[in-house]
Amino acid sequence: MQEITKETYLDWYENMFFWRKFEDKLAAVYIQQKVRGFLHLYNGQEAVLAGALHAMDLSKDKMITAYRNHVQPIGMGVDPRRVMAELYGKATGTSQGLGGSMHIFSKEHGFYGGHGIVGGQIPLGAGMAFGDKYNETGAVTLCYFGDGAARQGSLHETFNMAMTWKLPVVFVCENNGYAMGTSVERTANHTDIWKLGLGYEMPCGPVDGMNPIKVAEAFDEAIQRARRGDGPTFLEMKTYRYRGHSMSDAQHYRTKDEVKEYQKIDPITQVKNVILENGYASEEDIKEIDIEKIKNLEIFVSNGTADEVIPIHMGRMTNLGLKKVGLSHTYNEYDTGHTISNDCLNDILFWLQEKHQI
Image (cartoon, one colour):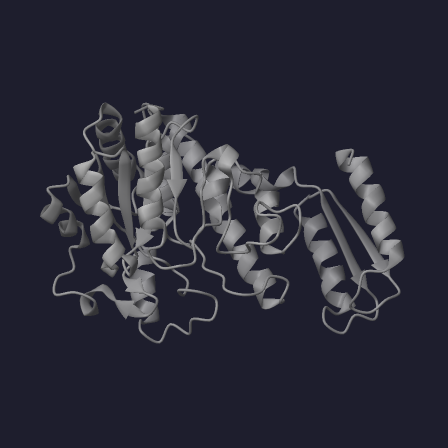
């Protein structure tokens, strides 16, 4: 594994901060009904991804996961705009707008979804690893699933096959405490999900999923084992999600105090504290990092003066807010309701040609 340096911490902070804000933005546009259907957000679980990416060889290793899958492809190199376009149902999305929130996909970046069927990706991950073993690519597959999917029968069949054939795969349970609204305590007679690997004599263990260092170290050991040809590993990442299972989740099964307790060990805050304690950056430097990620965005904002869904004052407030934080953007108003006029379309096309040579 590459050494964890000052640059690693700064990259972790910048990336995890961006992932958190990306999901927050999705929550906002979901409420505005610009993104529809199911929406499962990753807030709180960012360290699991940050640590994994540090240990992976992104030139050949692969990842497959369930439906909480917006920021993983971004971490692996997919343009965030393509992920957002997919959620908006645009043809420029990662799945041409046909997959939506639960089916982000990018073969060129080694990200194989995004699967809506609970546990459906577990045997697929083993199949991908079998392909790499057969073709001697030296690649390792990271196969993620939630604590709810750990109760599916396909997991046991896959574990048995993976150990029998010594497949180069790392199975990862992101245990955020709840399978939708059902706590881990109510789904089995013990809460140590990692012990499921013991029945197959698979190397397994729990990991602090709120700490990217612990995550990276565990992944490095597992990936190296798989790459040597010694077979799979099962890691239980003990993490927590701050938002509901999906945007429609009222979260009656837990208290606000419980969420606040986990926010005390927030992965982004942990990384920030290490940065400050070691003098890697100052508070002012971190504030710069916070806005630098969005500074280079080209933004086109428009609003209809007679729009009853998004009133014109909201567009004007957005315009003032973007100016206040110093972001370069284009703001236009049109004499329309909640629709896109031909004038607006022409302005967008001109803007795309000017800003992006499209």
